[in-house]
Image (tube, helix red, strand yellow):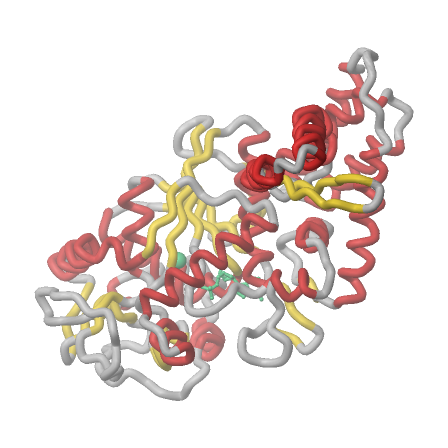
Length: 464
Ligand code: AMP
Ligand code: ZN
């Protein structure tokens, strides 16, 4: 498989530390607000990466953090604390909003068929480990104490900028949305490992440390969570392009100083989704969330298809007009798949392998999802038999996750059962046994099957 690696600024052959087994770390959301559809574009790209690796035969061990402490409104450790700001806005505690927005993010992922990583770790759960990590960096001479805070000394490294294009001035001005400067730092790129002299009197969450009551800086969580759950050999680290500097640059600096060797080999960054006015924002204009798209009648999976239609390394502009055309295309695609009839004919193995190999080649080509979709359309247009088409669609959907065969699955596995239950309920109702009729309805509901009584009889809908 070939992947674009931000570290080498090249598309490279992907070779994991251990043959067939891949370790993958994802920077999770800062849970102070809903995720916007831009954030979710990055998580869709990472989901495709994990599923493509699985499809190509790798086992993937994946970990994601949840940022519930330490992320300030400027990535350069200045501005307000995002979690405290969110809690104030909603008159709740930091932990309450962290829980609420983590649950919302999880629901968004479910709606978009983004697989929840097997290990998800809130930043606040590993404070002791951060303290040990910082102590070790101080022992090794990479960190210093200044006015109560602990900073990483970036001048100790020759290759601090190795993840970026080394354009120092541009990088620094890019992350500053305030002119405020931290006077305690020896160098302007030094970053906070542990805050004690906080300018936030109202900082809610604080922990005892050798340097006083305080809380961790933002970058340390990802280094420590990754080391703890995935070890010192990390294959792929993911995030959006805005994470390259300073977040991932600082992660590399502190982790490699701590372990004394190279840490992560491949840095995967998804480009941004922009709206018509430019950068997507949680505070300005219409706050574009999956719930908002749903309230306007869109299927979240049409948004997933919208993202798959473009390459993750290209910026993408969101407009409702383009979502309209993607939703049309999505419905046509579903109808086309629905029209395929399962019969007893043999799978045409040669055709299956040919299309499957083209699909794999598209994935191997730095996750070319739009070419992968073209292979799907080629299959549907081809003259191979329906059984072979269905087998290919089912296979491709393991990666695309567009629920292309959902209706088929319901027909096969559930239809008989649902029809029997509907019949039983009808009989119960005609015998005036409403308690039984209601319990049948509830039992189906608990399985996500919603009954609808119409003049023509009872119909149903299945929710995931
Ligand atoms: P945050 O919750 O701010 O920590 O961001 C969560 C993820 O979304 C990170 O990986 C960011 O890099 C990514 N991200 C932020 N803005 C955008 C955007 N407009 N388009 C795509 N990804 C984004
Ligand atoms: Zn991170």
